[in-house]
Length: 480
Image (cartoon, rainbow, N blue to C red; front, side, top):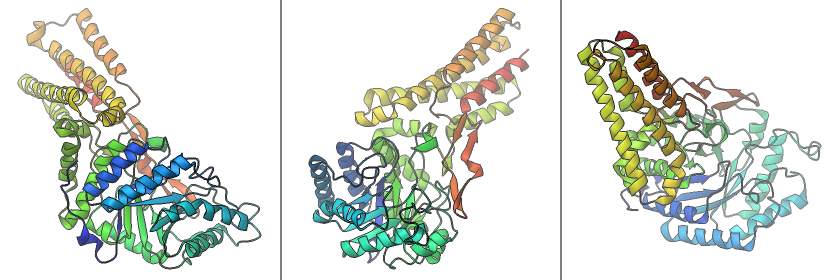
């Protein structure tokens, strides 16, 4: 991979800010080969941080008390060294699920678990209290006033023990703009401890510098923004988030102590978002998210990947999948004359051919075979969608008077309808390409100690396949 971006020093200033990648999703953790790829990619794109926090690594979370196998520590140390050679901080994060917060024995186990990473020369450690029970365990209920005091106790002791290593903490209430008794206690942590925050919601259409500054002021701590993009875990598995990373700008970075993009379990595909973050760090106020996205796609997989990514450009921060196809269908919906119908139908066929050719080129020529494997379910879905849409457009053409001689027999009509519907049903897969038929984004926020689902969580009726099939049936009915 080539280095095409600056170092980002213009945004980092005298005090190092941490910009990079978080392996913090639910799902199969990355392979070490992919972690090495990502560290190299971060370095080549002016980014300086890789956070290790995979939820499904049992030693990170469920079995946090157990030491890592020697071979795993050896691999981690090799990754740290790789990062050191290229200016990338490899940061270990631990999530002590079920920890008895008041137990000195449990505290000793936590320090023992972190000791190998300290010995590797760590400059940063992260303590994660996200997605844990939001109340004190019975063993702790008589020791602390609330969960926040318990978490503060653990974080303060770890920070003192690990000093001068810098500690960051993710509180259990990591979204929103509210304050609470829990956060009042977390705010009493030493001022230099940065807190992780995902924004107003778990996933966010926008992360403004103003919100970050306000939140940092209310908590009294610098914030590290944990941006849940391109992650597609939980309810979002139907989407491949390889579209534009929008709704963020240089003010987002200036107001924060750092920003990490939480990746998908597909590391090579996640690099598309990282390239855009690298551009923002380097470009500042001149950042263009659309141009950055296109450039990154071309860098990683050529023009064919850029075409495929257009069809998947559907996330909470940029929901405009299949833009050219959507534009053409809109024109077709407005077309009234036979000449206009024929012209726009031809343009749609050209667009479908362009996409078919990109699909074939990716499968035949993409050098990164690991990326190809990651994208395969969505490539398959794209192929089914294109086949269905091509059948629909061909059916539309069959209905035109110049094709049917002014008559459209029942058997012919039923044959066209059955063929279009059969292929359309075949295109009803479980991956979202060309827009979603149905999907649920993890759009939640914390309010008064509880969770609320936001209106933009539900996505329905956005499929361009369905829209085109509906258009064709309308045109067929009008042609008689």
